[in-house]
Length: 287
Image (cartoon, rainbow, N blue to C red; front, side, top):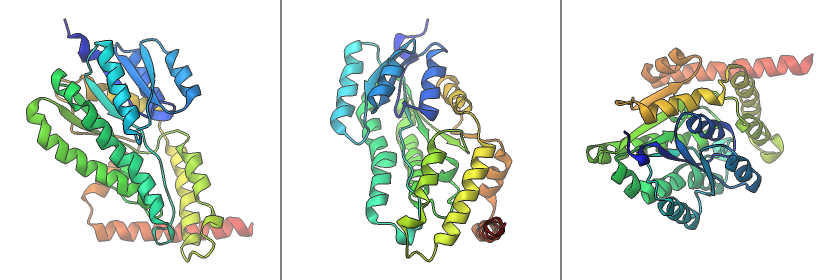
């Protein structure tokens, strides 16, 4: 019989998208899930999912992280898995962005993850459990005009590799999930962020707008359902020997190719894509 704590998992950023799908998937496959979210309505909805305990959790607030740990400890169930899913997206030309935008990005996508992982590590050490990091294809393929988001995911990948090499021999595994486009509300948020009025004097706005609109349209077309990522997270938590990275995307071969191509060649492909999207945008505007 498996110990009780082996089926208990905490998921951050559980209000919607990948987080919500992960809670539902894990809860329906034998886990008890502590679902962390900030929004009151989302917490009420999460609390109605069987085998789920909703808890208020803003990863930028250490007091809420500590309170979440106390709540889980008080339940006496232990903790086997931590799914670091909370994240936000900041986009725009890097040379036009204020430093505050990058700091806001890293507060959630990097420092919040560190604070959460560090706080819950003693429980994971006790259970010989697992840390599952939700990265992105943007964690190995940096796209133009999504610099803050890409930088935060690149940082997460490096952080996760270092963490894995530090703690694996203590029995705690670290696994990265790298989703490609996923059908979530993030596309609508990104679309609103690419607003020429935010950068009225930018020399990059024509390229940024054209590439942003193209990327959003392509992403929505190629997007997988959040449940596909949730399933990968399930295998990361349950496999006896999980992979170090799970790439979840329709065209995974393209991403694998990007990982091995020389950077100058990838740069050339990206430049051609920008020029192509500008031509398409001009043609559509003229029609």
